[in-house]
Length: 103
Image (spheres, rainbow, N blue to C red):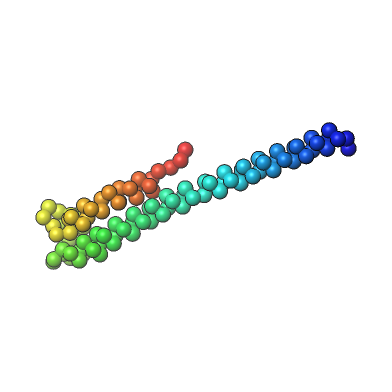
């Protein structure tokens, strides 16, 4: 093998290694996005159920989970309404986070 052929082979091998390293990095960068979206969806669901069904329902005197709608917990004058209103920005951020997609 001549000196120029050997140099061309080494250069080609270096290019292949560079491209393969770039591809691996790019693939690894894509993995956290779906996990983040999934985490936002799960966090939203859990926090909504806990805040409404556990915390707010326990603060509303006489509330019956079977006979009354969950919207009564945030009705005008209901005692748990301020805590539910405080959770709205958190829920909004989690819903946006779970619904964002990359194109």
